[in-house]
Image (cartoon, rainbow, N blue to C red; front, side, top):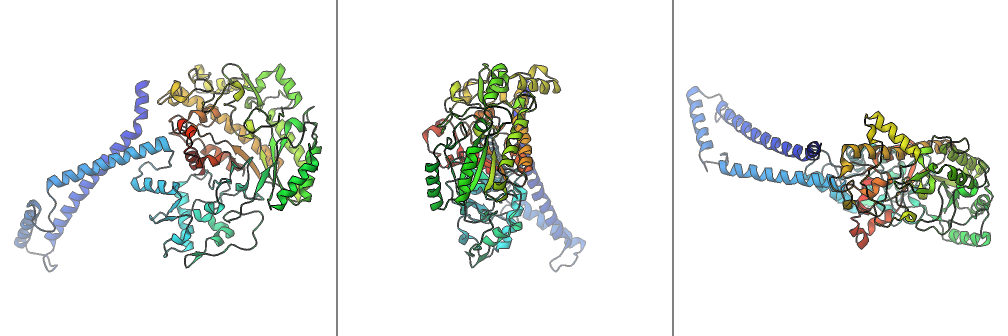
Length: 618
């Protein structure tokens, strides 16, 4: 088996070397054929373009042979054999270096390079990452300065070229247009040549908001710039100057404009456990201050543990209704989070809001409804995805509980949807509302930059693992890795995550594929029900930016969180496709860390926030 693995690991490099040798041989053959054709042409035509006689033809042939064989015998003489050999060696050496560069970039950089990419593709990829625009014909100019564009290029040509480049280089399911709260929106307009994706029903461009200023929002629609008149208008150029944007902007589409809607996250404990506003007068003053500085609206968590606290399907929305009425009277907008997780114990949590009491009672008799690590420790932060389809919650499955909660919210606040006050609903999909496993709980001993642990040891997930292993014909694979370390381990300290570790073996690939697919299936199921409950409204999902150990081959911290994203595989494409399927936007958390590459702790953890943002963007 080890010999087979070595063959698999080295397959790409051997293929590159074989391609290099074949290319060199093809060039040599072409040179030889061109020389033969040239000699034949000289023999066929005389000095005046007339067919020569047989004796004259023999003389021409003899002269040409002398020119070819004699060094320094004229302008059309071929270079000496030694020089040709040196040139071939230099070319072979150059191509070998190119192959190694490409292999390294694919392994460590997650660059989307084609199989037979050349050095031009590498330069273009690096230039685009640095913020430049590279057209298919090689024309390159800064994206921020449209005045630097070549004068001969028209705006129409620019748009069509960008569309062609996008269709050639980017998979149709990838997400485009990542923006951060710290970035000027102009940098990410249509002139950035990276496509603008917006869900059609979105009341606002979701690049405006997240749970905090550290969140970046990503739309996912699929519309290219030609079909968006607002974007096309912003790209018109006359004498290398950009025409101003239309004075009236459509409320539902700010993509491609300098305008970025701004939403402010309200405190987590603005509503208490009795679903009452903690300080109505103080909150009203704060909202008036926000209105005075022209913010667009606020973002608020609607906690499952508060609204449905006492009994199944008994919902209390009183505090939220009073809050929404204040926001409406001040002519602000709302972005609402369906929070199906507990609050407390994570970074930024200043209040404690547990799951509903009746859920905790079920958990005491059946603790397998919670995520479980290898040591059997339960994580009560949210429900295990193993019970998404198991009727263990008083006759309901977990996804039915989520759907009933969302449907109750939609019915209770229907007028706010109809009036456009609620502009977006973010659906909680896991711990901290993020689509991930709770692989890094501080209460169980995790400390940054630990790799975390797999959370798949409750009876329902183990049952799913057993079924998957039996379908593969390897029932002994129905187990978690036994050499994956502990919460605060580093990748090189484990046999599973180290370079050339078991994560890339037959069992490792099977397990990680199953583990990550459960995450995608959970998101797919919950978002399909959210789309049904909030039909006609924009929905969004939150994805964490797990950037530590990104510069290692295994990306261990991402693997334990459910993102199958090692150096030789893109783990975010399937998630992007799932979000695109439901027309959901993406709240990409911690995107601002891409500007903090020089932090010492990031360097020690081999972190690469910028690389992660770059990968998700493309």
